[in-house]
Image (cartoon, rainbow, N blue to C red; front, top):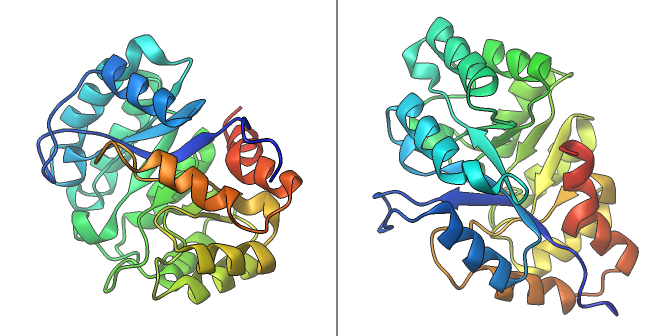
Length: 251
């Protein structure tokens, strides 16, 4: 890697609330932290909304980043457990009224299986609305890459992103999902350097995204960027991972 000033868009960040040991913060404060860490922009998702009251927390996220939409791309969430009609109505509202650009689903925290009857309608609706869907993945029993891939296969027009590329134990499954399904992309958030190298070697560079889980703490971004700069990855591929692929999915 020669150009260490390369633009970086983080495709997996969180708007902190009161859960997971976080404290609520302003969009300006979070942006300042992210920019000082080296980011040029960020896809940002709720934390508290994954534990309940998704509509209220979609509102809080939208309000928190309203004045910083040149930097943040907000992702809403919905709960399949509230039923298909309610989830689809909230998805419509989040896009139409709040300006959300993507959807985050977390089967593990939200306690639903990818086979839940509301999941497929949600995925298909997201595709109709042009929303990429980022799933938490890598933690059984409900968030394995191939479980999510099975649902994604039935909604081929929807871009589905495995938010952690299977984490440490299931990254091989994430690679298989990426290679088998045209609509599946991999976010390399929380992956080890060795797994990143293997994923980059085997998967199309156009389907890989940079992510850090930033928002949970202030020490995640710089080490994550440095990890990539230390790997034997070409500048052309790094540009795709760091910003070009994110911009292609959400211009």
